[in-house]
Length: 208
View 1 (cartoon, one colour):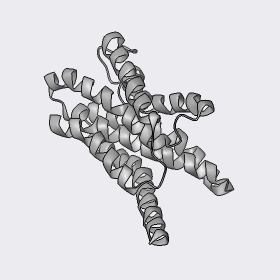
View 2 (tube, rainbow, N blue to C red):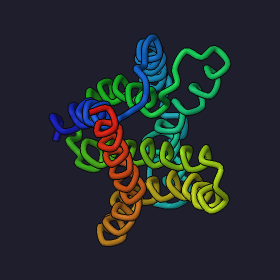
View 3 (spheres, helix red, strand yellow):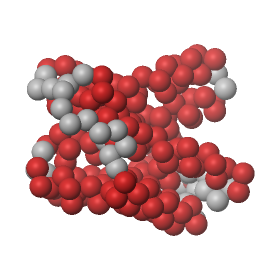
């Protein structure tokens, strides 16, 4: 489980880079790792931001969302948006994936004590699902099509909520609901990967 947690996001980053038709990151990759490391260190020393010692209610769900699943995956998108005027990086998907790596590496130190699969396995998967799903939604918005914008808007709202709820169900020992939400949360990521893979294949054929 520790090895999975350690390697999942870096390997997924390499996979995504192999099917991505976007330009190289350039200095954006260094900024992603640097700022992601600063965020990870801040969370390690000053977190969790919402302390929940017990219970399974709304406060526990909020703690999961802010400290474990949704907010850590959404934070790099906010920073990327702030960098847009400086044109440091144009590939927001790879930027966000690189950002996530330092935080996971530091979190393993604390998570290894409990050896909890919901942390070591589920968190990396859910964060990746949010990043790739949100990236797909952003590209739908950029397409300018009305139907795409409507679907993307719903996805932008539902993905973070669904991912946090998925973890919450597993934490509450309700695996049936957890697996259902996990499957739903992974759908946007799988669709976006399939679309990206198809697009990359078309680009290669046009260049051949």
